[in-house]
Image 1 (tube, rainbow, N blue to C red):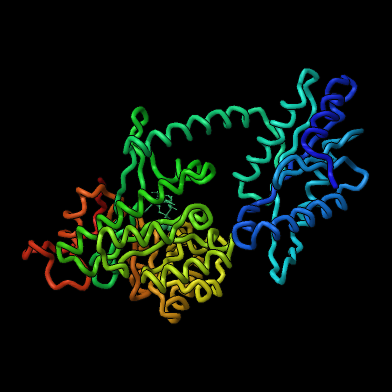
Image 2 (cartoon, rainbow, N blue to C red):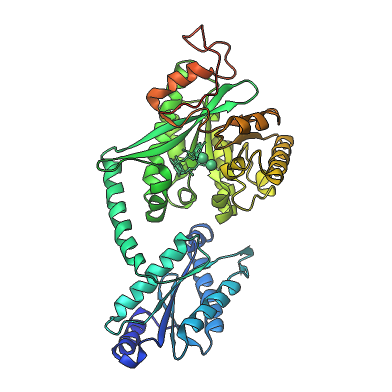
Length: 443
Ligand code: C2E
Ligand code: MG
Ligand code: MG
């Protein structure tokens, strides 16, 4: 029952051709967050119902303040005209946020679906309707980048960023095809025994001009473009090959963790990829660990918990909850997602031992996790003081620059030699192991 894209652009064209509208016209670009997952999990019919419900909610909210239209799948636009459009648009966006807090009930399933909103003001007289819509679209993407479920106004730097993003995307495609990506490995140390329990695999990009680029810099681009799926496949295969090589050398107790992005759960076939990698490399799958962040779990709890259950039950891999403490820190999720390992986020560790309340929290989290039978790993340990304080908590593992930065595959044997492998009597091939020290080492 709403205007379509064509009709919207038609009327916008008239609006922008009238100079008296400068400063008196705003558009809101509304895009549902993770709408695709509704289609993927509940089916397209349910998706259609959700769109109708969304249209009704938005129409209710907009009322006579503006004109609502639907310009694409889950994309809606509101045109606001008149006096103080900036304030009106802001108010609309804020009300919409509240409106989307109410769950949708579709066929017995209740879920919350948020929206990201971009706002552009018609401030330059010479703009075309397409330019104006594009600005609102860019602002909407910036709202997505800012964590979704929020609104953003267009600003000129967003246009530069969009070009920049597109360049990155193209380069990342080349990187995949030309094997510029590789893995580095960071050890996890058992604090009581000071031996290595396993490693975490982290992806790096050997960029032809810029050199080695860290995951935190390009994973977000990979996620927003969907390239994370082929990248994730590469990471899983490489990691399984590494694990197979350890297992064939007799390091049977070593585990290897790979990071899995939320996008990989609903795009691509994660189960197939992992099953195939396990089969091709012949690894003992219980040594493969999947690290999933709490935010990823929260995004689509039903879908993610179902997929995790299948991966665990049918393939035997284990699950780590990554960056614990940065999201909702919901302890009920630990059971719901059958988590085996809890990784306490670096932001907590940084405050140890100076901040008393953080210390109390960390020790409570560790105790609780342990009594639930979980393994605890503390991320980002950088100082001797942190290690001394954490060691007193007993049976936990630590990962961080103090023990070792992530190293390329060639650097692994030296680490195994230096710390030894937990659960093995003597490190293979080095009967005279040196006493482990905790002096920082980098590679
Ligand atoms: P994460 O899984 O929490 O990984 C830990 C990050 O903290 C890594 O950054 C690591 O290099 C860094 N780190 C480790 N110890 C310390 C320390 O003592 N001090 C400080 N300051 N940093 C430390 P990196 O490699 O840049 O990765 C950032 C994030 O990107 C990761 O956070 C993970 O969420 C994601 N990521 C990395 N590799 C992959 C991947 O292959 N696939 C996916 N989907 N995500 C990945
Ligand atoms: Mg991780
Ligand atoms: Mg982490």
